[in-house]
Length: 360
Image (cartoon, rainbow, N blue to C red; front, side):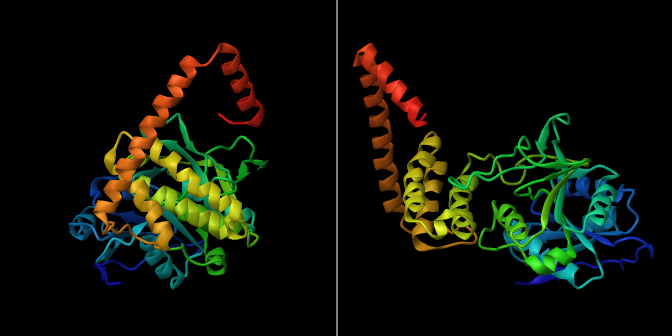
């Protein structure tokens, strides 16, 4: 790994209060990064430093950032190390400074002026909190909540954003996992829990990291009176696109294998293998996304992690794609014919059986 740091100023802060380092990850999206940085610089919290980690962008953003935001430190990486690897660079450097907290902030997010102040106050009040997020709203629909906590379905590895059943104490929710778009980390917890797992590269690394923290006794908190806004999936594209179609099924398996039932039981492994077909069917309208799902499961079979590497067996991939398409289309037609031809009483009985068994 080669670091190419830009020139930067020293980072003195006021003598009182915890020192906070804000790490913003940039990748070929300087306009959003500048807006993100400017929102942080408007913060009412006095003792903070802002670092931009450039994750191997095509163009060096150092000059533009230095011109518009001269107090910001730029750390330029030669390669794209993903969310986990890029943020780990900032975390490692922060561990060498006299900071008490680090804020990992997506460059497609903006923060309220009092957000950091409120996060620090919550952490200082309860030393059990190792990591925390604000309540995050959608950038284009600021009244709509994007994130205020979530649970993990340990049967499937799905991580829905839902605070409905989360325990609450005052203005703090205890969440099973925390979203990484705006993640506030206590340095003491970082030293205890360790860095982000770079096998994930992109997606699920925040869930794994915060689950790891909670299993070491730290509380994952959502501070409800702190707020940020997020341009969801601005850098990575649609969740049904090729990028997410590869990393989601692959990394979900890794999370379940590391912390869930896949560690010890064979039945969940079989269930997960069968779910490959479901993942594929959800994306059957896009050839790129379908094949990304197939590549994800090929990576699982080969136990390969980190950044996506194109499959070298392109003809085999194309053949598997063709055969699955035939099976999917034929199955749909067969089911439809069966529904049309079956007597009403048989159809009704089958529907009752499915309802009683919990299937949809």
